[in-house]
Image (cartoon, rainbow, N blue to C red; front, side, top):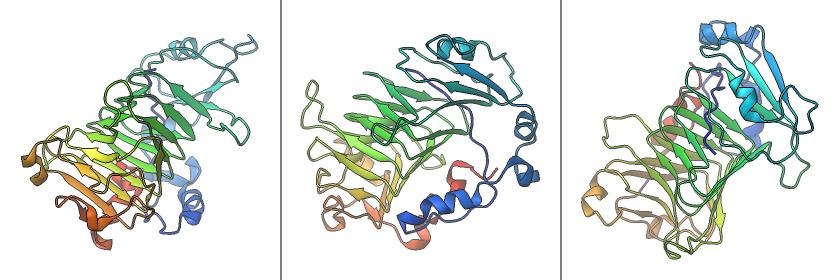
Length: 310
């Protein structure tokens, strides 16, 4: 499934994500305000888009405006200037979904399914489950399930909250800038390609002058794989930071990989901050991996990291 959802609304105040995970939801809800209260802090085109939202119902039983998601998206005109909320009814939709760049302000939403298997939206594929090339995209309470190359953060700023992301090798990759908050990362061994090789990230920054990268905050790393790497240097200058992350014992003691290219040990930006669990072992990390100080980690603990206040 190929999906780009342009729905990220800027936030009013930039505050550090709390150290206490139990306070994250209250922190988040406390800085989210209705459009009318945000005033000049929002992009003017976004304020205008929210004035007359359009709601499209998608129901497989025919009770909605459309019976699949693709038809609903196709009904949105190019150059769309208003919020379009596509409300998806229950069921499994086997579609390859594409939202074009010139169709902004689209939101896909659905009701949660109980407390078990409760993601609002689940996307599954064997390759490129989700590719995000648009800017200011947000994903909340979604399951993104694949094998290698599950989630392509191609470009732009992206925000993931309360998500479940599953894969095998390099399953979060690309040149984008992303913040993953309170999300579960599930790592599976790749039995077909290399059962001993499992990697979460392959961030594709190629120059330290570029301000891109991934920040994982208050996440949890679990899975069935063994000796997994938090990231590997697919490109020359990847930037990835894990903060307040609970790491299971599946994490390799060294934590990270230079991808068998010793020179990249000098150019990678692989950092950790106050992570916990049996897999969080600063003393055994590779020499090119550093533990950040409180001051150094602050830029990765705010919504501004993905331009969330603009």
